[in-house]
Length: 302
Image 1: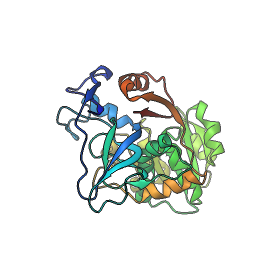
Image 2: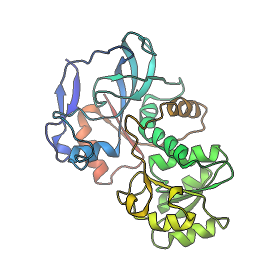
Image 3: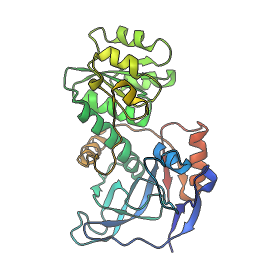
Image 4: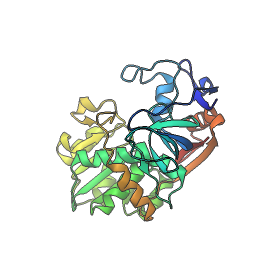
């Protein structure tokens, strides 16, 4: 029987256990992949602790993991990929596993690693989706908070490629990297609005907050309109009249992944992989993320 990571109750990283499970079988339109890489997302940790129970309840045991890349080993009727194809996408039944099901598999370009493909799924779709929701256009100025993280890093690159002027707030250690990606990078923390105004004397048209660091009030002041600000991380969004973009099954934009894959294959999209772990060490991966011992995306390798 194949192995997967599961947990039977909410808790710390130690609730994650390597478990023998039945191999899933693909239904119509689905494929089963032998997982080569599974991405670890911050949402995985929040669900594991029970912090999302009010909005995203689970049924135990849980098999975590949103994103995978691998090789198709079984295809259901009408599936968009065939046995032997290298694909990536959002896992239907939990990605921390040796096998997973995909309903919308996307072809993995030859020049893109399995780890990078898996890492792109949720963070790439999120960046793509929010830029679409903001309606930010060529020639406008976009402020991205928390641009040093994975979502922010991709959003910077997508926006710059579209002819958008990007101002990016981040920690000191990320400023040089973001500047190299085409953004005007400024240090976050106390006094950030003044630094942003100095970096963008023409003004800020839209704001994308990935940080959840209590920056919404000042962001609305900068744009003059709460409708021009979106957050994916600040649960106080409604208090400021700001939209909270959570994605979910009905809000995803699957068209994002082929475009992101093409950009990555062309060398126009960089997403740092901070660390990789064997599947059996998923608990250590979660613990290292929570302790701040990792930077960049974390990927499990079954």
